[in-house]
Image (cartoon, rainbow, N blue to C red):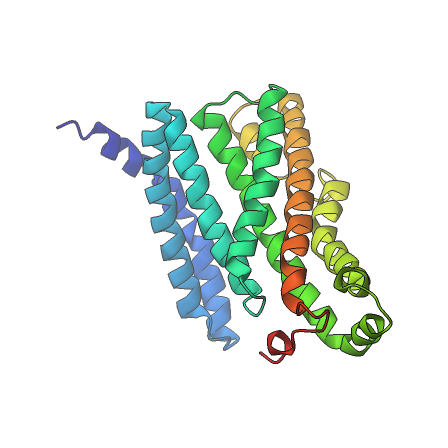
Length: 264
C-alpha cells in the first residue's frame, strides 16, 4: 500500500502545528484572567483539526471522482447541517429547522443555478462545493437571525399586532413592520461586509489565492463574484424564511398563536 499521501499530509501539518503557539497564548491569557475558557478553547481547536482533516480527505476523494452525484450529496449534507444549526438558533419558531433548511436550499440553489447558467463557474466539484459552502454558511447565519428576530419583535410588539388584527388586518399586514425589521437586521452584516471589503480586511478567499501565488487582480475578480453571490443567496434565503415562518405565529382565525410566544 502506498503511504506517500500520509507522509505528505504529515509534512504539511508542520506549519499548522507551529501555529498552535497562538492558541497557547490565548489559553494562557484566559487562565490569567480567570475566564474559564481554557478547556473550551482546547476542545474547539482539537475539534476543528479533526473536522478539517476529515473534510480534506473527503474533498480529495470527491475531486478525484469528478462526479455530479458527489456534488449533490455534499451540497445536501451542507444544507442539512446548516438547516439544523439555523433552526437551533431560532428554536422557538415552529418547524424552525425545516423552514431554515428549505430557505437555505432555495437561496443557495437559485444562486448556484444562475452562476452555472451564466458560466461564471464550471459545474465541477472543485468549484461548486467550495462556493456552495460559502453561500450555505452565510445563508445559515442570516436565516437563523431573521427567524429569531421576527419572533422576538412580534412578541415585544404583541399589542400593536393584535390591534391591527382587531381592525381587520391580515396576519401579513399586521406583522409587516416586524418582518421588515428582522430582514434589515439579518442582512445588515452582509451588506456592511460588502461595503468595507478590501478596506478593513482582505476576505478569506482572496487572501488564500494571493498567498497561493495568484495575481491580486485575479483574486479581486473572484472576490467580487463571491460578494455578489453572498448578497444574492442571503437575501433570497432570509426572505423565504420569513414567508415560511410567519404564518406559524398566527391561527387560522387571524389571531396570534400564543403557545409560540409563551416559550422561553
